[in-house]
Length: 254
Ligand SMILES: [Zn+2]
Image 1 (cartoon, rainbow, N blue to C red):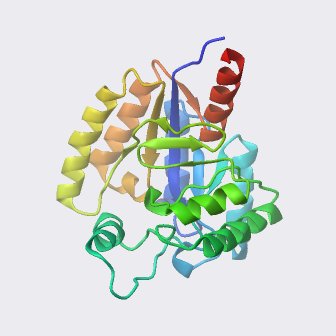
Image 2 (image 1 turned 30 degrees about the horizontal axis):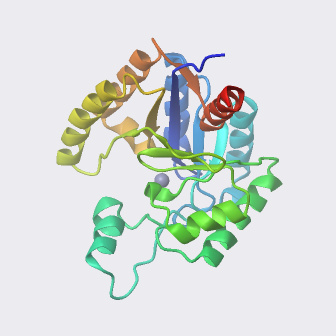
């Protein structure tokens, strides 16, 4: 048994607020040859629209899960309140790097467990049972990670790793675009092309898309182009499928 090179495309920040862009992106990905993605869903995006209050959204999400897309819990509000007297590193990571979205960066274990349990129960009301949790901006603190393990969450990802909690983290830096300003877009285009080449021999390539990416033509053209190129040598999988395949492979090789 051999392990196939894989491409995981994930769509971040799926919520009632981003549904239109998400629909367009998923249609384009399907046409490009990606039938199923990992969908990182925010239960109550910036506290301005809980998914359970939007029946159309819930039906749409269930439909996507039935088509094979994977639903992943992506924070709860996707918003971090600023704390008084923050250190420089905290300020850099939570304000400049991510615009106050690092909700799980420095939560206590109890608070992280409360939010993840709440999200999980709400998804279950829709008949969905997410196996993974990915922190907003991939900023997951040690206490929040302990909460995930305590709750039996199967895996998480960070910018440079995929962690199935049954095994050591797997190194694979995700392609991801920052579109908040022109200079960020220019840097992103150069960096992602370089990263795509560097990942050639990695068993896993990750392409992480945000809804707003499709509104920037050069960025969106590059995302589609690199996706199509990756599919010439890789199979498209969700994170959960990839983890399952890798776990089965390593169990067989032991
Ligand atoms: Zn996010």
